[in-house]
Length: 293
Image 1: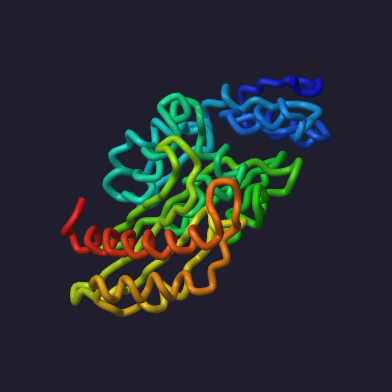
Image 2: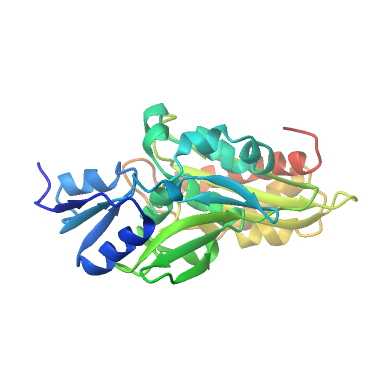
């Protein structure tokens, strides 16, 4: 099936793209295009116009500012995966990136496109929540606002961006203090597939070995990233070992009610979630204590 007819625009500046977005009713922004174009071919989406962001160089960067890591929305996965800063400071994000599709996907897909699409099975949303990322939204006329990752993902394929008005232009990752570590794990049928269950953990550990802060987030088990608050409460102030990690995993998944679909049943997803949460906690804790890379 072919897409319905649409107009095509290729602006070279963010200002021009935002102006077009505000003027063209029913328009969609085109980043990597791997999800959007597939939906258009099936006519599940029929935008009146596409605004291609790929010529806007000002949206493609990785840089540090006041300890924060700033990432332009059009930065591709491969550039992020190869970044020494991400590999060293945000290992959970690095692991999510190198387990994201195949090389062709990583050469084309963008961080902004993935996050704005908000697929419940995508690798990056739970990592953004675990890392306490901030999303910067822009609109025509120069207006910008910062949205916390916890608030950015609203529902399946739905974000806090105002439709037809705002575009995601930047992702900000805060500096985590000394003694911090993270991990990302997922189960999928094939490495290149979307996940059946995924887990992102980020924590900070004190000099005494007690957990000072922990964020445990699951993906593919709910319409949006799922904060395993029960696990975080068990971890608070504790020294992590196998038993403690198992108790945290049990507490974090006790109220979980994952969906059943062609990939897996709800029961299976819940069982896998408990296993992966335990493993990710142990790995993040070891990294926070400098015992694992």
